[in-house]
Image (tube, rainbow over all chains, first blue to last red; front, side):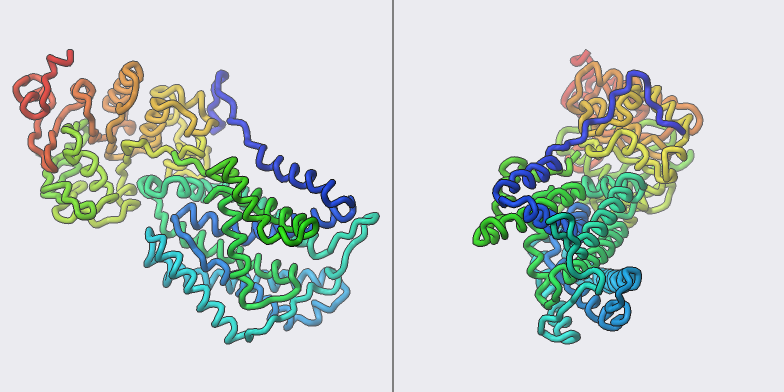
Length: 336
Length: 249
């Protein structure tokens, strides 16, 4: 059936572009402060790569909070697991990693990413069943039990991989930088940007073009009403939790390759950034998570260059500024 | 006489430490509109939510076609073809009108799979839905949201509609339109008709729509019968509801 729009139909509501323009504004504002156009371009790409990796990790977290009001402070354990699995997989695929062929290198990264995602998804399934399900609706207990889960997860990772930092070099042809004029663009960051954009596009398609996505968006707004329409939201939540864990695993692989090393505390280190991103974006909002992650990535890189001592506070400052401007975040999820 | 479509037998409901329903007995006959009246806090909304499984009955039985449903989870109750329009309308504000309706049509994966005749019938009842088809539902007026909420409940055939105070907060002109639409649903053609249990504070609306009436007080049904009887008995209205219809005319 075609859309039954009458001739006097009211047009679609206008899309709110301001948060996306803010990202461009922050980037442009940094240009005179950085001073050099080549340094600015390098920092911008690094910031976008970092932001998109954070988006991949945080997208599941924001949906989990939006759908079931669950504060999962243990999300970092999926990142760490994904990254450590990548060290094992890429170690076992030494021939592919060391090969000068880009195809072989991408196969190595692809297999590491898929294995990391599967491992993180499996852990997510257990995590939801054992730790999260008994504390639905109890925020304080959720925080305590999921943090406890992350500590246990880290200790288990130490048992398997040891407590020391493990190097995780990108494969041969993804090391180093491409030179575009005077601008150095690290090859792996380009790959991270591409993967982040693919994940973003896939999530937008899922959320906006499928019935499953419609259910997720509705569930974020009003769980009870979704159940009253005959949908089993618990099953949907488990599926989203597992998918979010898998994305965190993928993000862990990318983050490990971005940092070129992995340590058991990798998840805990990123956790604070994740919560800043989902709060800035608007809890439960995928588009907000995307915008928030890019802002955080850019801000961290620009501040690290312009005022390294301020870099520690830059994202907190960003969160405060955004919340003063839009207390519900950049793209708030409307409640009925 | 055939058994009612919905029957509540001695239903008790607790919300936390509060005992809200104290043994509700209620019959909702098939094909009729049963009005649930009573003062604020009498237990009307709790009764609807208990039928939907949103609050659990702590004792008693809820029977749909003689089958107990009080222990079923809410989605299973909804899948028994019971639709619920809550007091706050339960509209998904960030979704468009189109998406709200598509979501309520469990059997349809896309717009193409919606029943066109049924959709046209709903557009006939609520023309604003066609006009605001691609508009975020959260930006509709209160009356339009209520119409969307009712249309959403009717987008696929349902055996029973539970509607909680649909006229609350609406302007008189909008209330009249809503009454006309609900009367059309009551008269409805084959397949468009549904049995309705409707909570209402406005006795004029109740009289215009109801075939039967149940009056609640203090968590119990204190009167049940034909609406015509209550409408014609001023003393009974005064005793049960603290008002008389004549005073409202």
